[in-house]
Length: 261
Image 1 (spheres, rainbow, N blue to C red):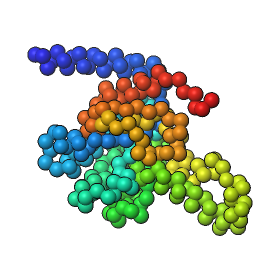
Image 2: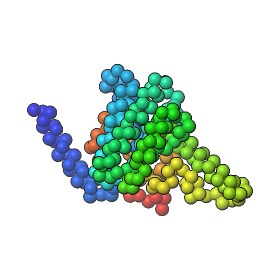
Image 3: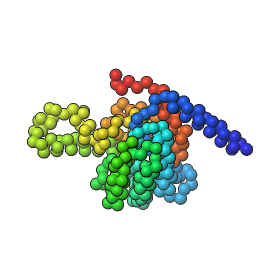
Image 4: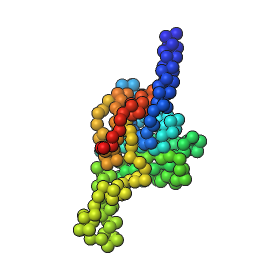
C-alpha cells in the first residue's frame, strides 16, 4: 500500500516538474558525463564491474528518449576517456563490447525516434580496437542522413587531446596550402582553432550534467564548455532517473546566462 501511494506521489511530482520545465528555456545541446557505473556495480551487489557499465548503457537509451520528448537537438555523451584506457584489460574489453553492441541498437532506434539523430564518435580512434572502430564507422554511415539532431559519443576522448589535435590539424592544413608558420602564428585566433575541433558544426553545450556527485569536468569538452551551465547530481549514472534529468533542465532554465557579457 505504501509503495503504491509513493508511486502516485512520484508520478504527480514528475508531471508537475515536466510542466514547469516546458514553460522555461530548453537547451539546444546537453553534454552528459555519465559517471558512477563502477560504484553502482559495487553498491548494488552486481557480480562484475562490466555489469555496471551495461546498466549505464541501458540508461543512455532512456536519456535520448527524454531529450527527444523535450526537443533537445544535440546530445553529447562521454563514454570513455583517454585516461580510462589505463583501466584493467577485462574492464576495457567489457566496455568495448558494450559500445559495439549498443551503437547498433542506437542506430536502429533512430529509425522510429521523434528526433532522428546523426550519430558520430569523437575522440582518438587510433587508440581503439579495430572492431570498435568498425562498429562506429558502420553506425555513422547508417545515420549520416539524419538531419533532425545529433548524438556525439565520446570514445577515447579527452578535452586536451581535442585541442592539441585541432591545433595540429590547423597547422598542417595551412602548411600544405603553402602558408608560412609565421603567417599561421600571426593569423591564429579562437575561431580558426574551433573549425578544427572534432565536431565543429554543432553548437557548444548549453548544459553539462555530471552524475555520481563528482564536482569537476575531468576534461570534458574544455574548449566548447567555456560558457556552459553545469549541473551536478549525486545519483550514480545507472540510477539517474527522468526526474533527475528534469531537475537539471529546470535548474538550467532558472539561470541567467550572460555568456561573458
